[in-house]
Image: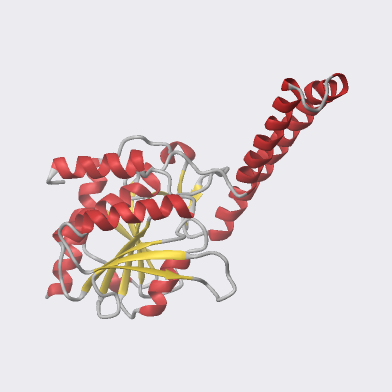
Amino acid sequence: MEQDEQLEDWYVRYHSIFGKRYTRKRKDRFLESLTADIRQFRSDVELETFKLNEKDLVEYKNLYVGDIKKADTIICTYYDTPAAHLGPYQFFDVADRKKNTMRFIFLSAILYIIVGLVFTWQVAMPVFQTNALISPVSLLCILFYVLYFLFLKSIARGWPNKHNLIRNTSSVLVQLYSTKNFRNEKLAFAFLDAGCTNNAGLEKVMNQSNATVYMLDSIGSEKKLYQVMSNRKLATSSNSVETVVSPEIANDRLVYVISATKEKDRFTLSKDDLKQNQLSDTNMNEVLLYLKQLVGRNNK
């Protein structure tokens, strides 16, 4: 990948400074930084805020570069990062993703509650029995409980995963680089919300556009690269990216570009794969070449 100095700056910023993008506040900070970076070389940047329905309290935000409604091709990736979870990452399986996250939350909450009960039995009860309520040691116990329940609330809504370089900062970096180097009136880019939960951002784009959508997901691991789709006619020729037609892809305008281990019809990344702290330069460069060929094909 060219322009090493700029890429190194983006790598530090989006891997270290904005490496966790789980809460709305952290995601907004990331979007502010990403927008500022892109506006240095492009002006056609738009932030869309939406809800799944009017009564929904959760807001989602997609960032677009180019006009997604006029584009024939949209290259996209999700920018949010996952909650800590049990088991490997199963591509295309939202139900399995939710189940593994809920298992981790349940086990973490049980262990945390046990710690609270032990503290109450061994520390708090003896303190409150032998000291006045307004005393230094009693006030420390009260402070402990305030912090305890605040922390329990965080556990209940999911604990942000700290290893996010592969899933999905690697794809964000490639797409950010592509927004600067690939320009075409019929080409747009989308940085999508909720890729780690319910795919709300992707569904929003699919509903607003008739374009062919290429989704980059976890492309920076050491595993083999695949383009996974329901329609082989969309395949881009590449020696390093294997084409797979999968029943998991319901929309015939959607192509996933991933790095994964393939087992029969399933694509996975293990916990060790997800914890990688170094990107595969080979895969990063191959995906850039893939996108360059894709853009060149659509320019004809």
